Image (tube, rainbow, N blue to C red; front, side, top):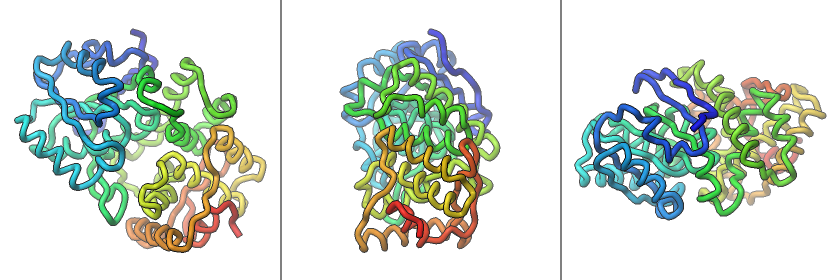
Amino acid sequence: MQAELNLTLNVGRPAACTIVMARGAVQNLAEIITSPPSRRAIWVADATVQAAVGNVVDTALRRVFGTVDVITIERGERAKTLAGFGFLIEELERLRADRRTTIFAVGGGSTTDAVGFAASSYLRGIPYVCLPTTLTAQVDAAIGGKVAVNTTAAKNAVGAFYHPSHVIIDPALLPVQLEIPDRDGLAEITKVATISDGALFARLESLPTGGHPAPRVLDELISRAVMAKLALLTKDPFEAELDRLLNFGHETAHALEKALGHGIRHGPAVAIGIAAATRISVDRRLLGEAEGRRVGNLLGRLALPVSIDIDKAAEQRFADALRQVMLVRAGSLRVVLPTRIGHGVIAPAVTIEELTTSIRGVVR
């Protein structure tokens, strides 16, 4: 097995997070986890993921661990609730998991978020490993140690910073699980490329219309996106500063998801957030019109939306959700705006009205 990416991120607790990206990584799990903390593993996945990759995962784990159990959770955002968190804790108790039991989060970002938060809380913290099976999780959600569940008030309202011991990224898992191309992941790669890696942005522009990268190209995109995220993340891994370039597009996306009751997928919401911030940046003359068109054209090329038309009730919920962000950020809505492809700034005093107008495809 030749790893495309093999690096160590020093994060405090645990002492280090090892990130490995390679096709076939799951089948070669024993080469990666050479010193397991115990002979016991529990892996957590929804029923769809279990049907798609369960045999591969279970077989690989049994080569490393003597005892392997599985917990079945809800699919997607339904797993990321306080009730879902309680269910996970009860299942870990039922299986008599202890501090030397390793939990494996197998699935998309909702699964890695929910399992990571349960791992951070159960017995004041037990080891866990991320095996992301969606492009979004491989390039974004599984990396960085941000684990959380949603409440009725906000997305990711209750959580922690708790890094896995390993993030094992196997692109070969993607086509087995996905029934449609993973637009969410392409949106996350576009996010990090737009504000931090102009060369990666140009590589995305070279994809065929519709964004169907060949396996070799997909591996390259994943590796570069992970490296770009880490370059931004390692400066402030525990968010001592609330203003972060990695929030690009997400200020709007999280509010939009909340306003629509999670009736919009994360990727399209992020794409709309990227497009909205880009329009505001062009309007403020922070970004040139030509580069603004490049961002919009790339989103279109990847079959991602650049605007949305919501009714008055949803618009009010969107504004209310943005005010929750403003409370977190000391009363100021600070939005990441691109200044040129590969660079961005945190702009103060972006108004709710500006964002509400911009998600519809206009600024004024």
